[in-house]
Image (cartoon, rainbow, N blue to C red):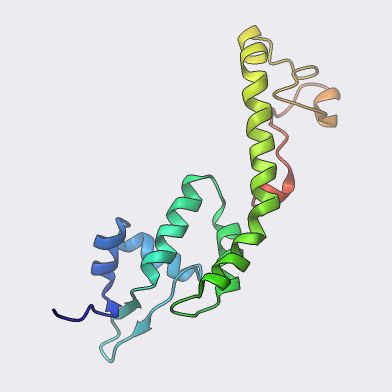
Length: 154
C-alpha cells in the first residue's frame, strides 16, 4: 500500500474539501489556512489543512463571521497537525458566542408567529424588529434587529 501524501496542491485541496481554489487563496490571505511555497512558487498544503477548511465551512454555515473563525484558528497557530487538546482550547472561545446566537435565534423563533404574523413591524413597538432599541423609539429610521455586538463583525 502506497503512503498517503502529506502535502496537497491547491487543486488537490480544492477537490478534497469541495472549496474553490479562489476561496482557498482567500482563506490563506486571511490567515485561516497556510501553505509553503515550492522552488517554483507553487502552494503546497499540509493535509491537516483539510480539517481547517472543513472547520471554516461548518462554522461559516452556522453563521459565524470569518473574523471569529480566525480568532479560534489563531489559538491553533500554524501547527500543521493541532492536537485534540489544542482544538478543545480553541473551541472554548466560542461557547459564549454560540450561546448568544442560540438565544437570539430562539427569541426570533418565539416571536415570529405572533409578531410577523400580525404584519405591524412597527418602528416603535415591534418586539422582533426593535427589542429595546432606543433609536426606534425616537421615530422612523433604519430598521434593524438588535444583534448583540459580540456576535457581529462590528
